[in-house]
Length: 483
Length: 144
Image (cartoon, rainbow over the protein chains, first blue to last red):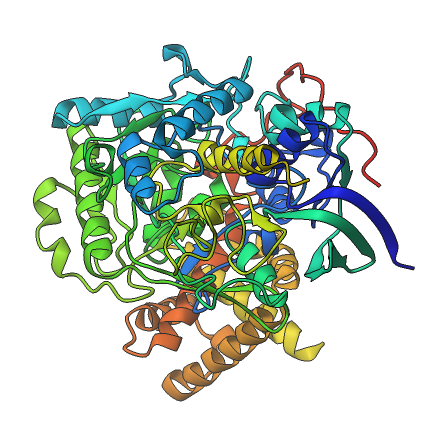
C-alpha cells in the first residue's frame, strides 16, 4: 500500500546539500519531509572492515565506475550521504573560484554572501585545524617533501572532535567523532520538527496545479516545494525521469579525477593509522589564485584492500609492494578538472558516467603525478609507484623522464573519483539548467540543492561548498516567502 | 549455477597470478577465504556488470585455450600471469578493460582478508583490541 505524506517542502536526499537545506527550512518553521533512498547506518555496528563497510556506505558496494569501467566513481548511500564516509576535510571553496562562478550568475548571494555562509557552515561542522601531534607519518612526508621542493602547503581543517586517530574515517567512524551531516544539521532539524523517511527512493516528480507530487516505490509526498539533493550523479537522472530541466542536464559533470601515487620509505609509515588527509599541498593549485587550473597533492586511501586494488604490477611486484605495506606512503593528485564529463540514466536507473581526462586535464594529471613523485623523493622515498601501467615504479627522479609520452588511454592509467559535481550547474545564462535562485529552469516549484549546482569544478574537497549551496538555496526560497 | 562456479575458479586462478611470486611471504590463495570473498563481491555487482564479468572470464578461457591449449584456470601460475600481462597492454580496449576489472576485484578480495594482514604488517581494526570511548550517536528521531 502506498503511504502518503503532505508537507510544505519535500527534500530528496540527505547528504551534505539536502541536510543543510532541510535543516535551514525546518529552523524557519517550515513543515519539511526529508527522503533518503538508503538506510540509516547505526555507527555502533561499524566494524572497521572494508569488506563489510564498503557495501554498506557506498553505492553498488563501492564498485561504481564510469560506463567503460576505466575510472572508479564512488558516492555514498544512506542517511548523511558521503559525509558519513569522507575523511572529515572541511575546506571552503577558494575565493578566486567563487569569483569565476559569480561572473556567470552561479552563486545565489554573490561572493561575499557565499563566503559568509561558508563561515557559518564551518562553525556548524566544528571545523578546526588538525593539531600538529595529529599529523600522521603519511601526511608528514607530504609536508617534508613540499618544504624541500619549495611548494606551499596547508594544514587542513577537519570536522572531528576528540578523535582517537584510529584512521577508519573512510569506512565510517564507529566512535561518532566525525561531525557529519547528522550532527551538523539533522539532529537539530529533527528537534525543529523535520520528518525523515529512510529507504525511500524517489522515482519521479510531477508538478500539478499548486502541488508537486513526489512519487517513490511505496511512498507519495505532496508538497508545495521540492528540493532535489540526490547527488551530482543522481539529481540529473531524477530530473530527466521527471521530464524537468534542459536537455543539457547531466552534461557538465566534473569529477576531480584522483591519480594515486605511493612511495616506499625506510621507516614505518603505517599510512592507514591516524588522521587521514591533514596536509594539502597547494603549491601547484593555480585555481587558488586565478580561479582555474592546477591540482592539489594529498594523502590517499590506505586500507589494505582498497590500496591493493590499485597496486600496479603482477606477481612479484604486488607481493613485494604489499609486503612493505607498512613502509608505504599513499597519496595522489586531485585535479581541478576543466573538461566536461557526463551522466545519463541506464535502463535500470543507475547512473552511466562517461569520462576520461583529455587535453589540459590529461596534461595536468601527468604534471601532478611527476610533482608528487619528485616530492616523495625529496622527502626520502626509496621508490615511487606510479599509476601508469607502462611505468609502475621509478627509483629516482631521473626515471621520471618521458612520463608525458607514456600512453594515456583508458586503463593505461589508474584513476578514481569521489567528488562528482557540477552536473546541473547554476547560472544566469539561458543555457544554465538552474537559475540563480536554485529553481530548475522550466519548473515552477522544483529546486536543486546539492553539488550538482557548482558551475564548474571547485578544486577542493567539496563538503563545505555543497552544504553552503544547500543552505543558501533554502534561504533564497525563505526570503521569497514562496512557501 | 555451473557458469558461476567456473567464473569463480577463473577468478581464483587470476588472483594467484596477480599476487603470488617465488619469494612469496604471503599465504597461498587456496589457504585464504579469497574464493568466498570474490563470490560475495561478484554477487554485489549490478546485473549488467556481472554479465560482463561472466563474458570476460569466458573470453579469458577461450584466449588461454587458443594460446596455450588449456583453459585459464588450469594454466600454471606463471603462464596465467604472462597472459594477464599481455591483456594489460593489449591494443583492444575490451581486453585492457577485462584486465583492469580482474586486477581490482582479485587484489581487493585477497588483501581484504585478515589471513594476509600479518604478512603486510597491518594489525587490523581497533575494535575488539583497543578501547576507545565512543561519543553518543546523533538523535535523529523516528525514521520509519
